[in-house]
Amino acid sequence: MPTFPAPTRRTLLRTAAVASGAGAVAALPLRPTPAVAVPHQGTRLVLLGTSGGPVPMHGRAGIASALVVDGRVYLVDCGPGTFGRYAEAWLTAEQLTAVFVTHLHSDHLSDLYPLLWLRFGGFQPLGGPVHVYGPGSAGTLPAVHPAGRSVRTECPSEPAPGTKDLIAGHLAATAYDVNVRMRSEGWPDIRELIVPHDIRFRPPKGAGPRKLMAPPMEPFEVMRDERVRVTAVLVEHPPVYPSFAYRFDTADGSVVFSGDTAPCGNVARLARGADILVHEVMDLDTLALGGLNPAQRRHMEISHTDATRVGPLAERAGVPTLVLSHLVPGATNIVPDATWHTKASRGYSGRVVVGHDLTHLPLGTAAARRN
Image (cartoon, rainbow, N blue to C red; front, side, top):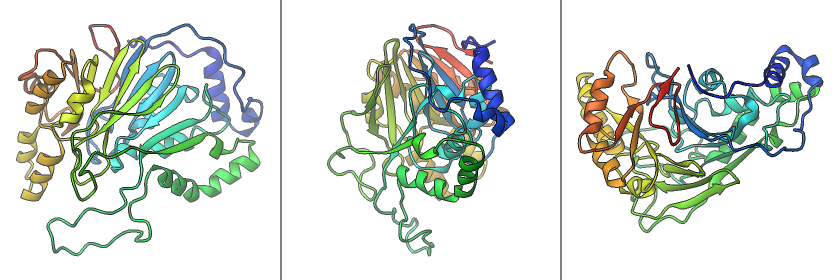
């Protein structure tokens, strides 16, 4: 059984009230009561979804991870199935503090707006609005590969929107529902509950959407509050630019999330001294059996990390625990845990954890637990 702190009776009643309709919502305060000092509750990593790619996979939801720090939730990516897994992990709407998107691929953000949209009625997070951090516009699209193919451009006036534009587009598309609920049910202004940020940084020399994806660079700060400091680097995930890895430093230790990437020196640099590295992996041998054409195989090789190559990277970073996530193929009935573990352990002297949905790892403990 999980060791998450059980939700309080007040939280469950508030959740049920919001779900029941407008009459119940009207009785709830739209602003939180003044914050009361909360004793240190520790930090835990929760793998909400561990499959990579947009295709549904048996046994695993799409990629999403939560770092729970003193009861506040910091999400990294929101792939398909995040909304349900969030609730299954006994995480509540009020706890959601910030979301960090590694890159603007569908399998990393498909549940981002639904999670924010479906929780806005009657709730303010414990510390104010939910801040969403993600890539800004790439500015231009990558070249067509192979060259010479005819490809239509969607929304040619703005073909590469960033995170802020993404949220604005979702709000515009759902305007009828949002407007009706604010008028008929007393729900708060959703624009006060979601604060999107395009991550600004100084790119290293030679970086760009049609240049180098992730030249060597030092980590830069994305945000900090009284519980966490978040830093990031560019990673190697062509043709997507920018694509980030994130590091969270807390009083209990540090966790690094690779995002989607080929083996990348920037990830090893970001992870130095961290306690846990959550890294994407694929099993290229199994994918090849599925009939990849040459272009697909090339994409996988230059954009992702085969399980046999992740161990040396984790060893180079010196992290004591390597957690495998964003597994491709993610179906639990295709690649056994033993295969993932054996391949990822090559060249690595630390502990390997094969990620499953609802796995949680309290920082500072030696064992993973799974629902």
